Image (cartoon, rainbow, N blue to C red; front, side, top):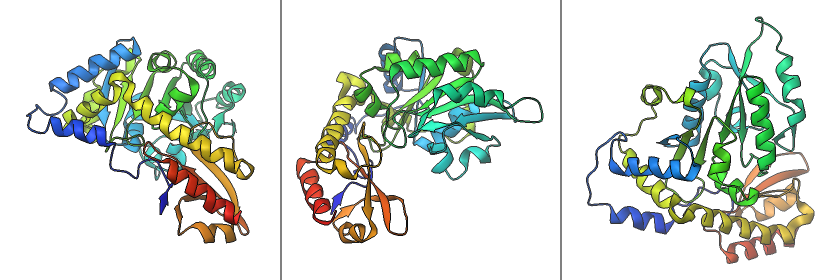
Length: 335
């Protein structure tokens, strides 16, 4: 079966695993006190061209929860995001369970409608309501779209004007960096905190949380431990991310997934529901067609309807030409 369900089905890039094996006989200090973590911290500062703090966490949901809890200091503080955001749809109420309200921002195909941010903020008029404190966005978005650098600058400028924080969920940030043609330095100049995802691009696990705003750095490791996020074997993640970042290896993985998606989209463009910018494509197919291909292609049904539904196809760092060619042939035979 051709696996296009998501971009985290493979254990890891073989290069990453081989790099880990080279370090297998070494011993390290735990809890981020090791030399690999120190090396990573310096490397991230160099990449961002800023005195940032960085931490390796296990996955996206716990990274979002801990990062947002650092920014939401009062029980009445709230988060503004689009309805399709990961924290709203795919995290089982993890944010709400920490006692904070999610406010919906108007959007255009999953991207924040920048012209509506201040209007939405202003609708929370007094102490009878929650106080918007954080703007959350995913880059790339849950629908695979990418914010331009200019858009990020505009959103950050509005956030500062409103005395809010801007947090970027970067589970698929490498995809955005490739498509948007910008760098970690650019991202670090347009937000207060963000993370670089590894789980969805060739690492066995791991998200690299980067704190830009000095206000948010104090006692962060206490919060990390308190919220169950501090890894005793943090050095494993540091080893992987050092390899990931050196020579921009992670960007080469993202480029492969996007190149494979371009081939797929070229042949299936008439079935597309949303514009394709990175490694995710959403296709509309009849339910009859879906039933015919579901035993040949592994995909996710994104929106189920009575006669036709929307499916999501995702290319990965290890998607091959053969995978794409076969997928196109199968779908064309039933579409």
